Structures are given as structure tokens and as C-alpha cells.
Length: 395
Image 1 (cartoon, rainbow, N blue to C red):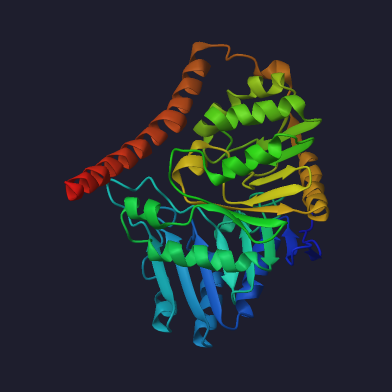
Image 2 (spheres, rainbow, N blue to C red):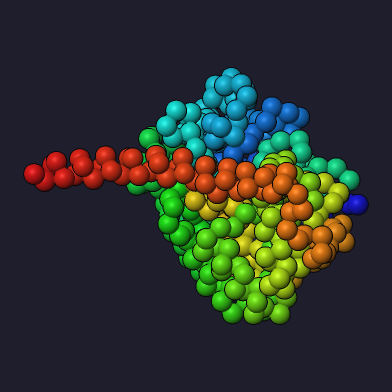
């Protein structure tokens, strides 16, 4: 199967989009943009792995820095665990800047920067699910994980630059300052394109608000997500939408790099199937994409539909209203279904033995109670400390 990249298309509000439906084409497009950068490169990533593709990016950014381009890397400290700190020495030596987001502390290590963004010359940006690692360099069928992303030009890029600079500013601060100072909002760059920035917090975020608004009257819903474990309001929102939508489809991994989370996700299948949802599991490779198509609206970015993405991580999503772009993305979705198996309702009844039930309960506890509970503990502890400090000053 050959790799796919679609032609450019324009939105009415002044944006130009290019859809890349494989990691292979998406990463190549990013490298091409870095190679032709003239003034600035901003790269924000969760995972950057020492590897051939890592070296390609490093060498391309080093060459850019040598020709006078301002290069700034923002990398998550946990996501890049194991990457040597001297890996980017040459970039630093020629004037580039390398920043490690939220260096591990015993208290606040749970809050991670899961975003994947490249902004070149303050004019063109790339957003998707691809990290910089070997598993993202294939076509998603014969080799490499199934992923991709979108290249975008237009007014939203200015918002992306601002979000990046704020993230740089708070990268080494304690988590309460991260939560206090970081962008968190639905930033409208025009009638058709918005940027959704989410941050750690246990209240409903902007991504959830946007989804709630778009799902209320949705007729056609097609969701691709690598990690599916909606809880609380998000689960109820999806189930309600499934009941009134003409078509509601979920494309989920058939194989997962987090097997225990997949156990928890599959425990939800029966409930969704009863509401009329068609569930497909992608077979050839690991599915890592995060794309939602709701009628003529497309969401794409770093956020999964699981507790960590929705409540703990820093995430970024584009919301694009364009019938033509939705059609492009929908064609990719239909292509992926050709490599997927439809989940049959009878095969997802209640766990048939005590061991399966135990695994499901354990998985749900870890991902919906333990992980969230640790984050909530730290958030509440810091906010209580801040409240006491404010009360003390006013006395």
C-alpha cells in the first residue's frame, strides 16, 4: 500500500489545510518544512526517541539553526525518558534552545505535556498524533503504527505560537503555576477553525464542551482513537449521541501497546453496542490516531478519549468545520475500516469467568480511579495550600 497525502484545500475563514493520512507522509512533510524554514522552528513533543527518524529531525533542526533560524524544542521529561540529555548538544551549540517540560518530581510527575506540534516561520503548523519515533514512520498497514495529521496555515497559527510560548514559560514551574498560568480555552481563529487547549484539571474541559455542543444534534459520527475509556459525563454524552445519530461508529485498536487499558475499554463494548454503536478493531498494526468526524466537523490532535487525556495531560486539538475536509478524512476512515474487524454483539457479553471479571475491574480501577485519584490528591493539596495562604494574607 502506498502512502497517502491529500491536496490542499481552503476554508472560508482564510485557512489552508493539507491532510496526511499516514505517519510516513506526515513526518516527511514536517521534515520538508524544517528544511525550508527561514526564521523560526518551534517543536513541542511528548516522545522524541533516539533513532534514525530522530536523527533526521535533529540534523534538520541543527542545519536550520546553523543558517540562522531560531530553533526551540519543548520535550516532555517523562515521554522522552531514556533520551540522552546531550542528544541535542549540537543544536544548543549553534544557538538553539532545548527545554524539558515538567522535570520529574515526586509530587507532580503525573502531569504531562502530551501535545505534538510543529510551527515553522510563524506561518505553517503541523498537528496530529505522531511522535518522533520509528513506529510512526510507516503506512500503518504493512509497517508502522496507523497515524497521521494535518498541516495548516492561517490565523490559527498565531494562537499556536502563543500557546507554545506560554508552555515554554511554565515548563519548569511547579504544577500549580502550570495550572494557573497556562492557556486553557476554546480559541476561535475564525468561523471554521478553532484551537482547543486543555490542561490538568478534573472539571469538564473545553474539548468536552466542544464535543457536547457538536454531538447534541449529530447525524453521522465516526471516531478513531487509540485509547478509549470515557467515564462520567463523556461516556453519557457519547451514549446519548449514539441513540439519536443516524450512524455512530468507533474505530479502536485491535492490538494495543497498553493491553490493560484495552481490557478496560472492551468492558465498555456491550453498553455501546446496545445503544446502536458499530465498533471496529483495526487489525494490521497498532492504531494510534486521534480523529473525530461529526457531520462536517473534524477534530484532530493529541487527545484520546480516556481519563488521562481528558483530565490530567496537557493536550491540543484542532476543531475544523469544512465539508470538503471532512470528506477527505472520511475517505481515510472508510479505508481503515477495510483493515478492521466488526465487533459482534454476542462476543462482548459479560465476562464469562472470574478471571476476566477481575482483570476488567483491576484495569478500570487503575485508569479511572488510581491515576485520576493521584492527580486529584496533588491538585487539591496545592489548591488548599494556596487558599490558606490567601486567607492568611487577608487576616
